[in-house]
Amino acid sequence: MASEHGGGDDGLRRRGCSCTKNDFLPEESFQSMGNYLKALKETPSRFMDRIVTRSLDSDEINEMKARSGHEMKKTLTWWDLMWFGIGAVIGSGIFVLTGLEAREASGPAVVLSYVVSGVSAMLSVFCYTEFAVEIPVAGGSFAYLRVELGDFMAFIAAGNIILEYVVGGAAVARSWTSYFATLLNHKPEDFRIIAHSLGEDYSHLDPIAVGVCAIICVLAVLGTKGSSRFNYIASIIHMVVILFVIIAGFTKADVKNYRDFTPYGVRGVFKSAAVLFFAYIGFDAVSTMAEETKNPGRDIPIGLVGSMVVTTVCYCLMAVVLCLMQPFQQIDPDAPFSVAFSAVGWDWAKYIVAFGALKGMTTVLLVGAIGQARYMTHIARAHMMPPWLAQVNAKTGTPINATVVMLAATALIAFFTKLKILADLLSVSTLFIFMFVAVALLVRRYYVTGETSSRDRNKFLVFLGLILASSTATGVYWALEKEGWIGYCITVPIWFLSTVGMKFLVPQARAPKIWGVPLVPWLPSASIAINIFLLGSIDKKSFVRFAIWTGILLVYYVLFGLHATYDTAKATLKEKLTLQKAEEGGVVADNSASATVDH
Image 1 (cartoon, rainbow, N blue to C red):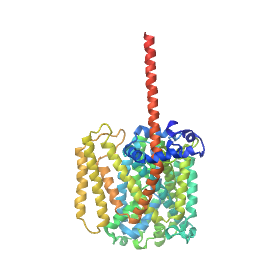
Image 2: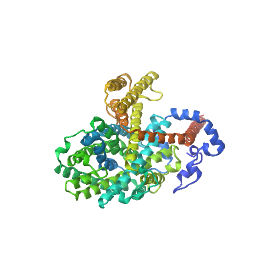
Image 3: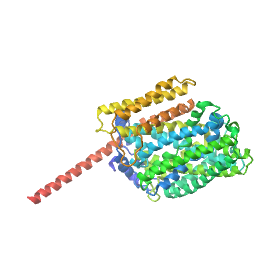
Image 4: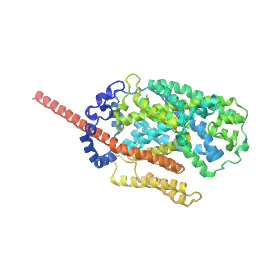
């Protein structure tokens, strides 16, 4: 693979934290200033090449993995994955955001918000599962989008995946401080440093969050199987606490608190659903562990779907309990369950809740750290990020460099930024990625290069375009028109008829080999529609932040990522052709020798 990396492969295979220029920019375009200026001049043609180029399943599974120098160890079963899924998802979302949304956006109807976001998450789980079974690599949605939508779309998604994990980890780390304070009978602000010179949203500095990130980093680099054992022990304790909250909470329920079930109307339910989607993210981290799974075809569907069913049921029951224990106006936004138990005279129960919440948040951080490092590793294998981040340690079988870098970024953001900002920004990024994975699944089923006729391809593109356009129009109408309903009478039938058209007028070009999403195209199409609709419930400021981040990504891509991936792709193609010629030469030589012997 040496030619592929422009001489950087030696650096990739060295153990430890080697830090030469070739570990970061080994590609041809960065070997001299002249090369770089030439590459910049070729930006338009290179950009078009990257837009239309799609990776192959075999490239992601074989060639990309080889760029890490060492293999990740296959140690995980469906049991590990299910507990990783539960550990990844049930954390600060249920313990923190439930109170915030019930009080400010949806009231007791927050349970319906969890149902809506849970259905959306389950549809995304199905899409992820088919990809994870067919392409069992560490790259998760980045690898899936590279195969189906091409390099450029994969890069935009990759940037948002990184944002999702860093911001999500930061949000959980700050929540950790809140519940730790409750456990010690203090307010969260007692453990934070107020920096008056900074803006209000960034001035509450959180050193405990940084310390927690450092401990998680050590656990994550020591090994996946050890992390798995720690995770399911901690998750079992966490589930016991959740059962305690549900059972004890129902004994203190007051149905009067449910009289005003939807104080903020239907709009409040969907507004909360968009934010509470944050409570379901984490399952995509499990898909990145496919490379370390013993039997992906069996273990991934059981692990992912099983963990999501358990999670959704727990969330709905806990949301019901919280709003039955206390009037929604009195729910505490920082530690809702702890304060609710105090309000009904069970002050001691808040310590159990706080302990369970800490356990849950610790596992969320751990699984997130493992997942984000594997995303980063695969992104670096594609040379969209420096290949130094792709190194896998020979002894531990884990990507140490990627783990340390990602958790350092998480700790930095957790130190400065308030939870509300983090949760809103995170939901935009997550919904955006999940929508693209659903689009990629439709592309995978209905379009195969060289096999799908141009007529079928054009029909597919028209129907897909109509599904996306009608879903976007529904989301925009929801965001802008507070009372109207006529718009839905136009957009929803268009979505429905477009999906019907794809179902009956476009033949599927590929069937899944092992496990597939049922009811295609209905489930992926519904996933696209719900994710875009929920985006219409998110505030304007979050979209502005999202746009700024995407702009930064595009600048990085034009200056670095585009040229690194272009050079890598060309070097790989050249190597393949050289190998093919050598093999053909060998065959010719063998035939000549055989003919001489016969003669």
